[in-house]
Length: 320
Ligand code: RUB
Image (cartoon, rainbow, N blue to C red):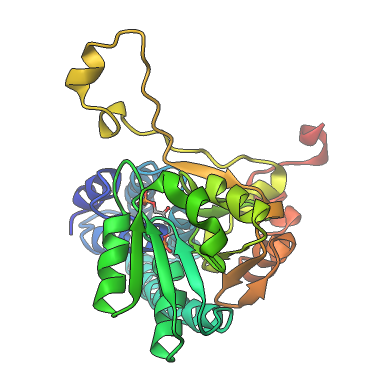
């Protein structure tokens, strides 16, 4: 697929979900790198940097996207020729895709252990990682039942119920606002993540924070399934994760909006769930309490404060 085609599909949400977005973006980088013709290494660098920028700008919230692009772009460093750089980037793309798929499988295995026979699980949106836990629990013979939300305005819940139905898992489909009504019948909430901040806060589909609040009040366990590349290194220095706000027409027909000049339709598509409402984050490296998010960023993603200072040329004087 052409670079611009992938970028358009991510922007238009034909390709969606943080893990899928990351894999599609690196595959697009690979195709773009291999289509480079004639030119020196400097030209190739610029060609790839423009491509990386285009992809990263498509959706601002899913941290998997810049993390994956960053991982592949490191392949440019230290290369002595275009051929060398291309080979290293291709190697990195293939590794990222393989690791990402394995990570989701591993999360499924670990997550399923936190699901008990007879559990009623609530999930929101359509997360590969969250579904991997639920599907695995079903595969190993646990008798489970799921509540899946509709997910206004894009209805990702329809994708979720199709997957659960295909797996033969007993599923209840509810509107987003019915969560509080059913929360006392739920044993466990499992959702995915678009980003995990250093303080353990999780960014996921709009409505997740409300569900977490209801679960917290009802003392229902709340688990997040997130690959390590969804942890956001820049939050170490206090950078906030940008919450994407999409077009109002996704929420209200523009014809109706036109007749309501005093009404502004708002469409934020993600929200932030505080660490205090999260019991566990399941990564492919194991399950951690949200307070250990810093460890993942430093030990597995390799970003410590020093790396940041180097990467962004921050010195102590600049920090004052
Ligand atoms: C998708 C969403 C998902 C996360 C995790 O939002 O919020 O819960 O991306 O998904 P959108 P996964 O539909 O707007 O992209 O576990 O598949 O990476």
